[in-house]
Length: 259
Image 1 (cartoon, rainbow, N blue to C red):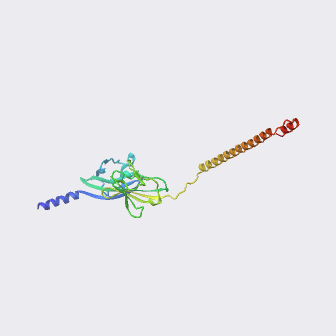
Image 2: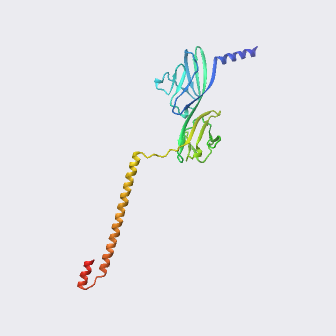
């Protein structure tokens, strides 16, 4: 009888305080909605929190908060960043009852990188336990908390950046950030950029001006070299004439005239 009574109490308690786990995903710099899935209009209060903090929820979007209530009890998070990824808990009070909702927020993004450029991903959030990539065709770890990067072509920084020093085509692929429970926090899809630098009108104009300036400089140098060479030849001829002077007045006059 005692065991049966305890079981009934447990069932009653579980029915009164329901907990559901919901997976949601949003793009970085985008918005995401944590839906409450309740149809009742008699909601007295909602409380949103993570494992480490309680988050203030504005009543309407007009209050200019990044997190605000929409409809009866849906919660919208605007302008997502990678640091928003993780678990959220929404507690809803209504009709002397309560429902607890648990969300796993996953954030994704796509970036293109040119070969040889530095790739910086701000994905090492506080809940990150490891980073995996499938760039080689199968998932492998490239970073773990406490051990850091597992390649000499990569760096990690104290401000949460995972860096590939010089991007190669074989680095393209998906990078997943996992928490200690193996839940996916962040996914970044990296592609090799095939774009070439297009010359704008300003760049074209600067190129033409530079080419003209270079041409003028080369011509001036050529003229200077020609003048110096001619001057040396004339001076050499004049000195040769002086060395051939004779004492005969007529011959000296003729020689000087030639010089």
